[in-house]
Amino acid sequence: VIIRRLLIANRGEIAARIIRTCQQLGIETVLAASEADVDSVPARLADHTVCIGPAPSPSSYLNTQAIVAAAVAAGAQAIHPGYGFLSENAVLARGCRAAGVVFIGPTEEQLLAVGDKLEARRHAVAAGLPVVPGGPVSSVEEARALAERIGWPLLIKAVGGGGGRGMKQVHEAAQLGELLELAMAEANTAFGDARVYVERYVASGRHIEVQLLGDGANVIHFGDRDCSIQRRYQKLIEEAPAPVLASDLRARMHTAAVSFGRHLRYRGAGTVEFLVDTERQEFYFLEMNARIQVEHPVTEAITGVDLVAEQIAIAEGQPLRLTQERVAFSGHAIECRINAEDATRDFRPSPGTITAALFPAGPGIRVDTHIEQGSRVPPFYDSLLAKIITYAPDRASCLALLQSALANCRIEGVKTNLDMHAALIAEPGFRRGGVDTSYFSRRIPTR
Amino acid sequence: MNLTNDDVQEILRLLDASSFDELHLATDRFKLTLRRSGASGWTQQMQTAAGTAADASTPSTPSAAAVRTPSVAGLIDVHPPIIGTFYRAPKPGAAPFVEVGSTVQKDTIVGIVETMKLMNSVYAGVAGVVVEICAANGHLVEQDHVLMRLRAP
Image 1 (cartoon, rainbow over the protein chains, first blue to last red):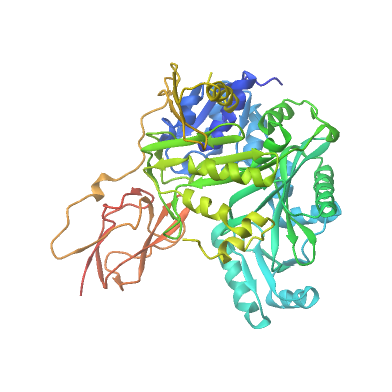
Image 2 (image 1 turned 45 degrees about the vertical axis):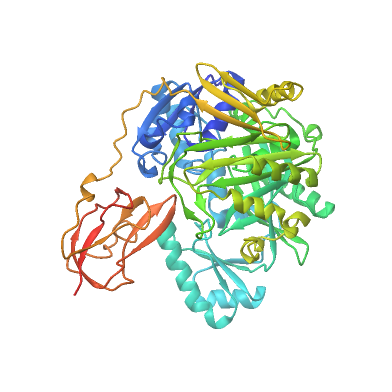
């Protein structure tokens, strides 16, 4: 297949990001937009815009039938699902296949294999990857027996879960029954699936992930990213490569990620997430994300590879255009996620209209955004306004550049977390590098 | 064709070597302003032309204007804590938090407003009885909208 016209089933900065690569490749773009987004910046950038339904996501960005029908009607050869929404949805992949449209992503089988956390864990074990000791449980008795084997404290997780929902820490045996029931009830409410599993709780862990590309036969990696700066399981800052990481640990993680991808005969762009136990200096497989990720620009910065262009080439059926030896790493990149939220009022969401949008520019600075003066930030979707990425030969100069880039960014009309980012990257803890995932919640705000 | 980051950097390299502090570039698709920001670098401001390609219908998102009704003497209005989508029940298919006639306390949850994927509880705010529910389930509500009215005991 040669993709000449591509439908983007997404919104926001990632829609604008995909359009940019398509323009460079000479691919015509059709944006599938909800009623709230028909006059958005991505809609203005795209060659065509098709309205796929009302503003609430279930009626538009999550409406598989409307999206496939829009692609067919627009004469698009392929659908790029971006991240979030239907990006890892096997039903959309199947719908595309039935309609003769290329789904830019992995196969249906691969989506199902990594979409279910227990299934993904089984594949990880089969591929020889270390996983956090634990397993599925369906009763308090089972959970207690497992706890005796793996040791306290425990972490209960939802099989169908994500974003921290249905997750519970258990520090003593007496709490187990109550918290297990609560986790199952929450999981059932949030995901329609009450199944949970139990793992050893890693007290101090870093979130480090490895970027993969596969063509269904070959799989190579594009290095790692550290995403440990998180608030309530939502990433705020990501960097590549992960700072302060022992080189043998890093190399073993790269190898493990590639083994996992090869085991699945993975096709497309994907990310293998690991939890690095900072006390034991060990790493464990967490999950695989079968899509492009929000933080992909930091990898693009240090490798010089356009990951969206590679996704499109793979979807066209081309073999990988790079070998592992030809993936060269240089420099350091950091990304800050600028969100429409009030960091001074418990990160309360702040939808509204942008009255001023001034972004930093210059060598080593990249801004991926979907807002400009006059843009509306609707209350229906996530709060990501822009990603500011800086790139420099080393981490110290990258941080210095990031500091001035943040200072040269001004967004008015909605509240943002810009000041919080500026304060955070100035903290000695962050500047040293290698913080764990609880750093953000533990830190004493500078102001 | 739109400008890429590489294009912007190319322009900046030329500007850096010049004595100009500002550049305005206008095409039929966008307007770009680049400004020198002291010694700390440059800023960019982009304005994309309104799409002529949008072949979509006009927005018809359910935002019930009817909820912006005047206050009723003797009744207490309950407003959303933030703009968002109003839900009367904790999850689809579940019973609503309250019905007309329900007795509520100050901290009784009477609904949920979903904003940017976050669920915000709506509290009654005062003790009383629900006498009218003004906002429809699943509709966009703004902060000055009335969700429901209560009568204090």
